[in-house]
Length: 342
Image 1 (cartoon, rainbow, N blue to C red):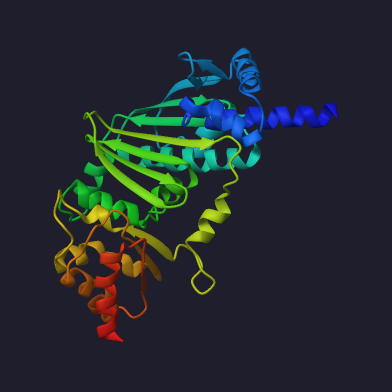
Image 2 (tube, one colour):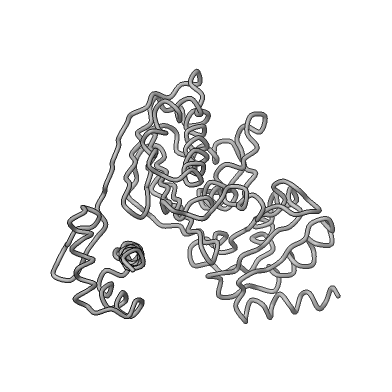
């Protein structure tokens, strides 16, 4: 009986920790409903977590997760020190408390990002910060070199930073094809719960979950590139599963990409022209399956849809294009084009 009571108490406290930040205002009522216990019992669990330094009380009825471990380092950046060596000597011990599967993802993420710093930034050093709470860990890697969007623009014939972002998020983009296949950012973003790149006053963020969401915001401009990654400490995500999501039995390897159509917007312009469609489709012939995500796209023009779902497909029969998360209006426009080609 005592063991059952202890396990139930652990379950209650795990639930509180998982909800205390996002749902701090109603974490007590949510916990009472979830477990059928009194508010007084929930407050006892909250008191326990405060005493264990896992959460702190910020006001009468609000709590937040405490940082239980924090590390900061400035690492020299030289081509003579491979990223896997830097990981083993400088970073791995910062995350030693994490489960093996979670640590595997952190190794992947850090080595990919630090390799980019070494190969592309021109920075002489990188600042690394790791913060761990009872629920998740956050890592920041900041270099003061050439910003990632400027680097892409200077090596490719692109219009502006927005065009660079669109290309970067498709995958298989590299400024040094002889040394890198351009898979790093695409897969690293999907390994983590949240992933962001801040450079030249532009914040590009990816959130994993039910959707596959990229967002772009304007921030205060600073030097270099700042990458932030967060991951739940007990994540069930595994590297092999992420790779499998973008592969197939008929086309092994990185054969499927997701193209976020809303990233092709310039300001408040709607997606109506063939030139916008062509820009959206640049380099997608490197993939077998292309998923065009129309989330946050309210409407598209007939010429835009025709260029993608009739003209391009007729010229590239080896590429399969599928629309995902299209609203009713967008879907009707796409279906109208498809009916003409049937």
